[in-house]
Amino acid sequence: MSTSKNLRHSLCEKYGVFCDKCQYDEASIWEKLKLKFHLIMCGECRKYSQKNTQLSEVIKNAKLSNLTPEEQESFKMLLQKQMQNSSSKNS
Image (cartoon, rainbow, N blue to C red):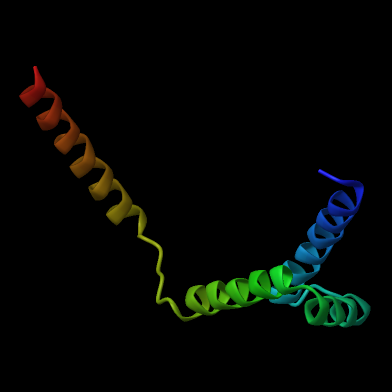
């Protein structure tokens, strides 16, 4: 890989971090401005930013919930039972 490609890759990695920080509202105003300018110039980073935004929206809109400890235990027992049945069929 040429030096200019290495430099660009390194620079894009830096802006990838800025992009991630923006998604979680952790980027400074200066980082946001530098990222916006970079996205105008770099199509690859622009695609990354769009995909990152889409992923964040999907996760934000997903109606995820945690299992209760009782549900976790029940699920664990069910998995163990299924694994035992599966291994006995294979023997």
